[in-house]
Image (cartoon, rainbow, N blue to C red; front, top):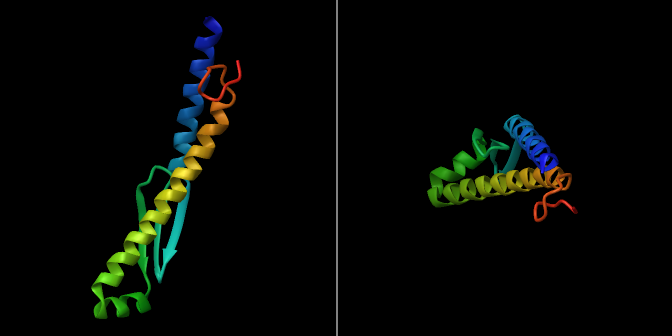
Length: 103
């Protein structure tokens, strides 16, 4: 039982390390001249709109809105994938059934 507590402490420590690592990981996604950058915690870092996309936006506001939505969704999806991969790596090292451990 004491070994399980040590494993749990190790798991918590690794999760904190990964959370810090994710905060410093930037994920970029682009759609039709709009570039969105978020960090691994899914916080927006920056949004860049090219001159061409902005020119098109004055003609079709709806297109700009759709492209912004697509760029954000791409970035969020990538962020989730990266986070899941990192967490899966530490979960496999645990001895807890159901969390990826084999014991």
